[in-house]
Image 1 (tube, rainbow, N blue to C red):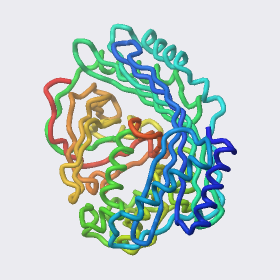
Image 2: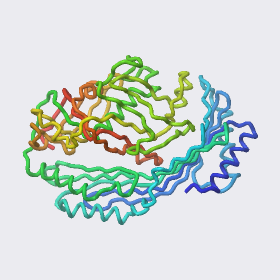
Image 3: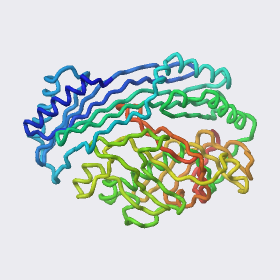
Image 4: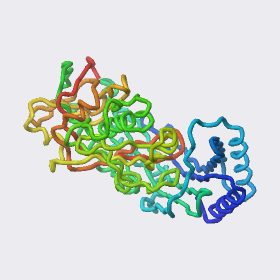
Length: 457
């Protein structure tokens, strides 16, 4: 926990650095995390960690030096030692071919609106008991695996540019379970995300798994033909593909270096369907909110694609400095992407009742990019995929692969759900840095290329 004593130590060293004419930024990151993994219907891992990291960066003309100190902050002398290490590195660093933009906390920020005081109730016992209830309710004859990451993140940022400070505290979790048939090898999955303990709904998970078990146990499976289909993408698939599309199409560095799939386009060009608007919205409660970035810049809602038109790029400080652009508040991991919504029909199956043949693919697996510059992505259906005819489920489909372009898939969207869902896309292997996208419950995309279908699950 970042207490006032710790903050005051950093503020004192910030003032000392300013007196010495050292241009520096101080970023303190704290996390209290727990991760549980499930394998073969039992707990395979239950681990917790409480970590504090302080990152100091010094700018000296065209040179920069940084130092990371692990462990709790206990004294002014301790932080001064880290500052001096960063300063020495800046003295001997290679000069950059651009002038770095100095970090500055633009105003006093306090972001604490997503901090659940009941989050400590997500104990290892609670998680293990929840998994056990799922096993017993859905069927112990299946093989269950999964993971459940939860924790608290705090961040405190100051710079020598002024006396302002930025502080964030928030909680987040991502729950995943995978059910596998021991003989037939089909798999179904369920995920939940959120920042409150109550965002985990055990009854909903059980109901969802039972629904898919019924389809996979009692309906005939199909090996579909390789051709173009109307595909209903679920929230997990939408979020992961949109994430790829954004970072390969609208990230400043990728675009400036002519590697992006949008590099042939200019601001104002139509790049997606007219019914697609993509925004980075740091105030959307279905995302993990952050009103400031790591450089201290205020983050505001920014449309990236508006009614299908390419309207803006995202620039972190380094890219903005290198290419002489305005930075956009994207020195951050807390991207908060939202996609506009439309149809009042909540159920994706009901939404396609007037369509002859549709593939319902709620999630994609092993997503990759065969060509960044052409915006080609690929991913396997693997989990929960169904064949639907005129609003009726025919049965599951064998593992099938989409290989198509962002522009084709999101350029031919016939229907978009009005119901928005939160999808956690956080990386659980580095420092805790929660990321969530708010996306529609489904998108009905026409003419999607299915390039492979296995003969079994």
